[in-house]
Amino acid sequence: MLKKRILLKLGSNTLTKDTDHISRGKIEDIGRQIAALKDQYEFIIVSSGAIAAAKQFVKIEHNGEDINVKQALASIGQPHLMRIFQENFRELGLFTSQCLLSYSDFEKERTRINIKNTINVLVANNFIPIINENDTVATDEIKFGDNDKLAGLTASLLSADILIIATNTDGIYTKSSLTTSSPKTIEAVSDLTELVKEIGESKSTHGTGGMQSKIDAATIAQKAGIETWITNGLNDNFIVDAIKNKSTFTKIKAS
Image (tube, rainbow, N blue to C red; front, side, top):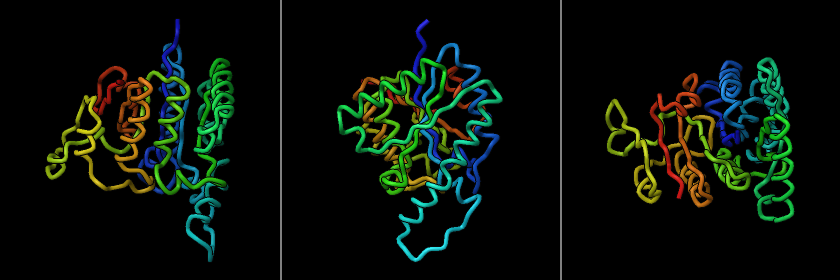
């Protein structure tokens, strides 16, 4: 049976459960769901969280620019982040690999082919690629999008069936309902221009994206014929519940 391919994007707020440190419990929750779904789905992960991981261990003194400090923290935190994934996933019988990419990699045809071929070999051999931007040499993710755009580009390149973006809300809320105590989720949409009108300017605690960067990712995915789901990654079992339609989330239909 041909498995469906899910590109799962995990933001810093999901991985920290809105705290100041990476949550092993959340990573175990994600691994447990992947293990339960692995007969029907294959997973590729785009994960933020390297800077959050570093902040648990070090405090860097500096006189330079903030962006350089963040790049240094990313360099320190990335191995810690991968170790946490590896340890938790291995206990569930899952194998992981690391792939560091830069946005410029998607602009060169030869590099695009290499990325696609390598990741397809990993997935075919039951390894879960965990992708992050190469923050030590590139600044786009740190400055602009919390890996949302990277997830959209990767989903498109690897012909994913579904792009799942985990965030800290139940999808995208209607603007009018944000002033109430019970925000209302936009559950299904195909016209992204209508969705843009509903979003605000706010960004999350650790992340750098906000909803605009998620819509930008969905736009890239939609052009490639990929459906995007924006789900609440803080909830346990959020992937399985979305697949079984047991949770409230935003589904952006493919073109």
